[in-house]
Image (tube, rainbow, N blue to C red):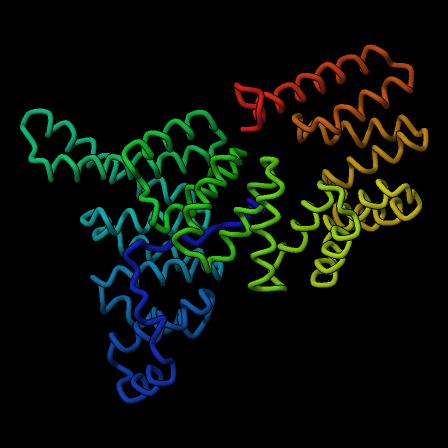
Length: 411
């Protein structure tokens, strides 16, 4: 899930057009087709409904050069180009905007968020770097004079935002410890504010770093301030599920489905939670509902295979596994359940192949480690069995340490 990009538009992007009546805007544009303000208002309204709308893009293209100070229009046009894969047009626009980006720190930062949301990391780093240099210069200049309280507060806020973006960029390089350090530094300065849309970026970054407990805290802040944000609530549920808080995860996912019964992936994750809780019939109903919505949901098939395995329905389990593997042979759950089934049916070499794929990609899977130890033991390789059993025992102890408080009660 966490491979999906997040749209991080300018925090100052105007939302007035989104609430305007489209028919009124269209009528105004027909009567004043050369008015860039009218074209931009209609373009933004259409863009906010569909960021890949050709009509919105055309209107924004016409208005943007004539409204150079309307940064919301420029950013919306840039994001529209990136959403539609118009790489050359996006590059040309960035080049045209370069002088203004160099002169306006807020514009450069908001453009950075747009680029980050579209996973354009080199371009995002370029915009961030120009702001970081300027902030560094001001820190050095401030060391030789006394700042007013307001100046000091503003400089701290700018430092925090630079650290925050650096954390997001560092996370994308796979440098987890350094990314967390930078994000924690920014958080120490109170950035992003808890009611800021940028909390979504923080939460998604923490999720991608597999810091599920921290991610769930961030998503909880988003849903507190935006109760109707179903995507954030879904991700909150997934974060809670990933950190083992099944009851809370179930509550959030059920709330998503109450508000929108067909919300993508919500039934799948609720089914996964219910399966973990051993509510097999309810889990099956949710997984089948998701599969009905998306007939090519390989992960649904893998979960249904797992459910069949738990019920002892080996032939049905194998049937689901074959369907899942045909769609996604690298799915970890499919390989895990395949390995478990091969252990049960005495095909230990095949089990080892499947389970080895899982532990190579997910070394922290205690279940895969245990099953792999079992497969090696039954195939006569006691040394390998002992290695994986030792890792399994360590993982179980670490899990207990995370969930049991110092007084012997669950944290």
